[in-house]
Image (cartoon, rainbow, N blue to C red):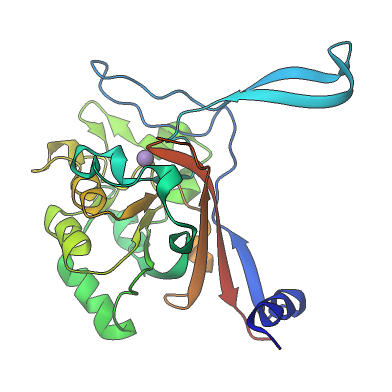
Length: 259
Ligand code: MN
């Protein structure tokens, strides 16, 4: 049997499960709020054109408005000043939209401390147990934050000092960007950086180092708790917005199950 026939057979008989890592996209989908001196992204909205009525008797359709970075979405290198000479989202080659994924679980630590930061030693400890990070693959950072995804306030977890959501330390972001062959970093939170990362040096180090290194980001992922630590294959499908800095994306994972 050919490799693609094998894939279809596995999907058909349950040896391979397709999981949706995408959050539903609607008007209450959480979005990033920046300090008010900065430009702001828009929430997702449907604008009805017609719905089987005088505007279109047999058809229903909508216009949509959305930010590029709304809901489950893909960060392209040009999103950050450090990656400004890199790929826009339409330029990402299709071969880099499919790859292996590992899951690094810090949900217990993130529940205990919403400002929890992944450190280089945590990555090294994971590699001791599971093997090297996958070349051309994703590190999916499981924090349990997806459970808050239907409640924008709990998701942002902000107080008068700003948002408090788990992330990655400056040293660890630099390590992942410069010392690994990862394709990118996927997270459950609103962005790849910690809520408090505006105060880091450099600010927003995941954005600065990973996008600067030509790597990618995936955010607001769901169902990471249903993935194995190793062995999943992820398909990330952003829209090819020409010149775009990112795009809402459908993200699927394929996982081998006992047949
Ligand atoms: Mn983004």
